[in-house]
Length: 343
Ligand code: ASP
Image (cartoon, rainbow, N blue to C red; front, side):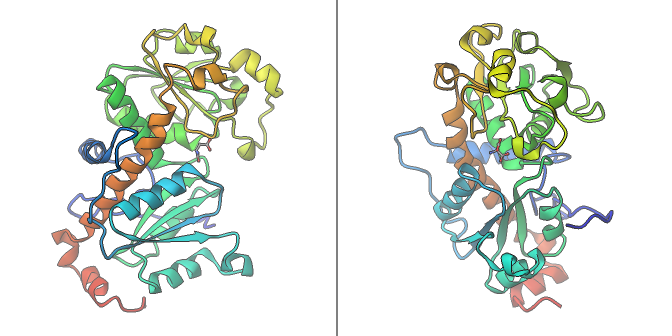
């Protein structure tokens, strides 16, 4: 959208509270830990009523997704509703964007309708950042996934799921398996794991799906599934991202499964108590066998459940952050109280 080089939108307010969540890269460890603690507070076992609060009463959250989504969008919307917010769900394909309205015009329209938090998903990596650099001071932007760049709430929910099953991140062996090259999920998870002290993070992928050497510093790289997951505590599978492949020559589904599909036999190379994760949607019979996806080591349903808790924690954090002293004494806060039109 905007190819010029520029300062990225600041993630934090001056007092260190969360303003926008566009990536997990560079966020302080203490902030990640606080978000995860709050998410754990909101997490509930299946079969029990979901957590609720009024932390977002009077707040309006809009979701604008220009790429398909099931879990992320629904869980952001449920999270906002369970915190007492009003929710506007904008179908970009059907909206004015089709009529040529630019994303920023749409955002300004929605700001006039008192939207306080935008949740954006786009195939272009810099769209959430562009929006974050242009919203009013009281407005926050949360990425629901941008290109192959970042999917920060997915990274947090993956981390929370591991913490619930393993009690820690530091000291674990974590294998990220499959289409790492095109995966925003892998990038955000890696940032969270590394910040929280993991030192044995392995990328396990065929050469065509391995990211460039300049990325994922400190991760070991493996080109054979059994070698990469040997002795691992966590096996994090990724979806083959056909929609993001322009160059990669990958074999057909049957050949891929024969070499790279996670079957019960192959999973035996990991620790017996290893957990298996997948962000979904799954290509069953391509990157993962149904016996594993639905098997005793799978925590895939916990990941989905944790998605709501994590998004409640993030929404709560950005709304709490905007009433922080650093903001409410500044000029920006005056703009916010007046709710006047942007200059
Ligand atoms: N749902 C995740 C994402 O939006 C994972 C995937 O699509 O493979 O990135």
